[in-house]
Image 1 (tube, rainbow over the protein chains, first blue to last red):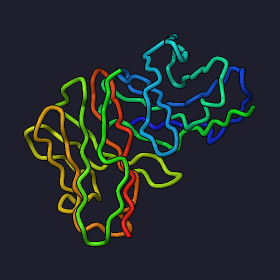
Image 2 (cartoon, helix red, strand yellow):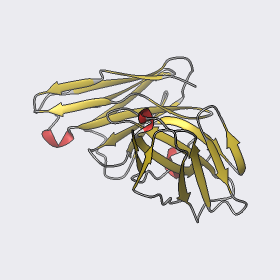
Image 3 (cartoon, each protein chain N blue to C red):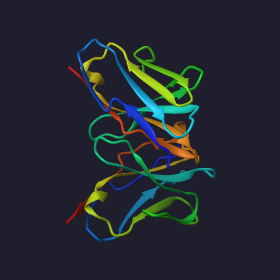
Image 4 (cartoon, one colour):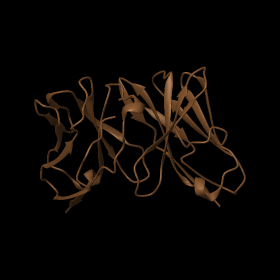
Length: 112
Length: 112
C-alpha cells in the first residue's frame, strides 16, 4: 500500500498560485496519483488525476517528475472558496479503495 | 463528472434505534460502492465495500452485524446503522467508481 506525505497546512492569499507537494516514495508501477478537495461536512470532490509528467484541467495542474516519487498540485490564482482540505492518494486509476490510504491531507487557508 | 447522492444529509436519532442511509449513483451504474466514516478533524476511513448482488466486504474492525449494507441495484446502496450508540455519531460518506472514484455529499449522524 502506497503511503503519501503532505504538509499538514498551508496559508495563501487570494490571487496567488498555490503548490501542494505530496511524497509517495513507494508508488507502484501501475499506480495513478489522484487529488481530492474536501470542504467541511461535504464529501471529497475529485480535482485531478495523473500518471506522469503534467496534467492540466480547468481547475488545476498536476506535475509529476520522472521518478514519480512525488507530485505537485498547482492551483492557479486561488480564491477564498479554495479554502479546504486537499488529499493526495495513489492507487489504481479507478480508485480501488483497498489500495488507497487517506492521510490527514493539507488544510489550505486562503486569506483575503 | 459523475454524481453520487446521499440521503438523508443529516439525521439525529436516539440511542438504540437504527438508521438507514442511502447512496445513489445518479447518472451511471455502479456495481461497487464504498462506505466511509469520518470523525471530526480526521481523515476518511473505509468501512466496507458494497457489491451489487453479493455480500459486502468489511474492513478489519468494522462490525458487519452493526453496519448492515445492502446493494440491491446498480444505482443504490444502503448502510443501516443498527442499535446506534453515541460513539457511532460521525460523518458517513459513500462513493462509487466511474473511471475514478466519486463521492456523495455525506450524511451527518448524531446519536443522542
